[in-house]
Length: 527
Image (cartoon, one colour):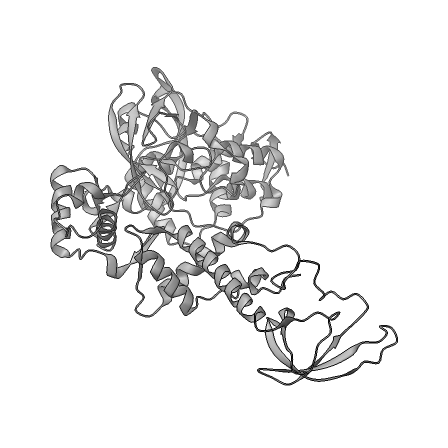
């Protein structure tokens, strides 16, 4: 058993609070460095310092008297240290014989503590007791101590969050941070609006993102500021100015927000998903398998069961929202193909697998897509449901994008049109020049009309169940068998409402008007 506060999990979690000693220690640590410190380094410094202070305090207290053990004998006036009472120190004020047949002869001590009322303890006790120390123990600990490394392993992530919140919550805090890095405001160079105007002009003239080092070289900051702290000063100032956006994949690279495409800054409405409650328990195994195959970025799937990092190539059947927005989804399968940084947009280069043409793409991790493909989709005539192929390169900021071509020919496809503020479907011939998922392909006669209907429905309380109830029978009517595949309904619903497959499949299964006919196929129920 240990009586150290540091051995209690709550000491590092729910009860954790920065002390003045912690603040002073962290300031000294940062002051001694010529570069910003990682947040994890601050946590390690804090934990190790607390262990040192705890050891020092215990040794000071232990030096003030004998360690209390029930088996030991004591005299009136003797100072005793009680490890199990947080190393409190008291003096024996009285001593008398004890009376308990179970223990035989023993003494009863009256101990007056420096604070609080007197308390009584057993001494010269012949029977075993858990407070007795073993041979060679000095009262510092009993049994195994969880050390600083184990604390960091167990509670490091939670400690980082608590440390961040409490450092930033201080009034007139001397600490500054950007992302995972921290420093002291007093150590930074003064980066004023004039410097930021120079940075804007540099990026504007070159038309490409610039690394912090490239910008720093042109600003003329004081030489006495260490280079790493000067760069951190520039990063902090640019991060606080709405003109600039950090788009770097491996390190900070700054670009101008006004030079970025609109879809890189905010998700188009057709890509915005508003979650709607539904009963996943109704989904049967075939439909759950279809959901997994579709790999929609908003599906309720266990991402830990999908490891895309081992894939060198992946195929995507484009949904309508992504085809119209010039985007591909960020999913557990596709995410590792792109330079994704949590909460931060980043730039990449797409390489056309047909012609080798290179063009810019943008990763929007919070909205779960990569944009910049509108012109490429149009150039290759890729339809909704068309297969797009992603391949890795040796450069993590470059991705090969390709299609699966075939000879151009006119084929029958589902064509959507707007009629009396409703979406209607018919089969029409359409020119196609690449492979596609036949169950997902859909075209439209007039994109402006579809957009207007989507905007109209956006402000109406129309559920996925209602959309499926309206669209599925129309799609069944296009088939000679009177059936429709669940993926087709999913694709059609996404013309009007961004939704993953789960809610659509649940609406098909829970609607008494429909019945399953085979794996993934539905028809009107017989009455």
